[in-house]
Length: 265
Image (cartoon, rainbow, N blue to C red; front, side, top):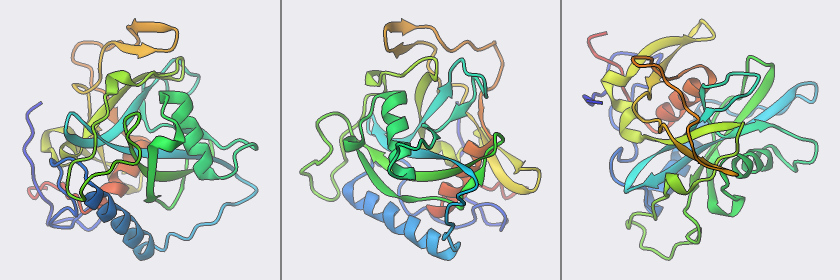
């Protein structure tokens, strides 16, 4: 898909910083991960991110998984499988917090392991997003941000500005029926005018939906069923990131200073 990169200068409701805090095209490095940590901390401070869990609510936790794939920095996303709720929609790995989970973060990491086969030891937690929103099912969803390493590289001995190892998306073994596919959303796509459409989250707060139709693989590897065709798309049908997933993507864009508002309105 052809993209025209652009930066925002006209909107206060959507991300409006003139320059991103990290490169959208250079692979993640140890230095850039430290920059993301700092940006998330600054964002939490500036937005008053001090929400405490309400014991009367049910909770869920998700991970926003940053990674390098083929030297391209981006975010891993899932296409939900044949589930009772939201089948075929794009989401982050995550799910409901169980009583056995020691924390919300532990729940997010458990779900990442179960859904895409990445153990907690391969995830470097960088911080939190928020405030946590309620899902349409009534769960309070707590988002965390982390960097996913390939197997055997969770503690790389590299210089601060050397690109971190790239993950092979094809090596991820998804868990059906929860997950139909996993794909990379390049950071550059977050500033791609042809992919973006302004919308309202919960009919009141501006955010961006993102067209990812061309990024989703048609055939994926699953446990017990190799190279199975799980993702069916009708010709011309769009697959978009929207709703709570799109909202949290918009928050990380704001935290990292990725600005995409079309100055023509």
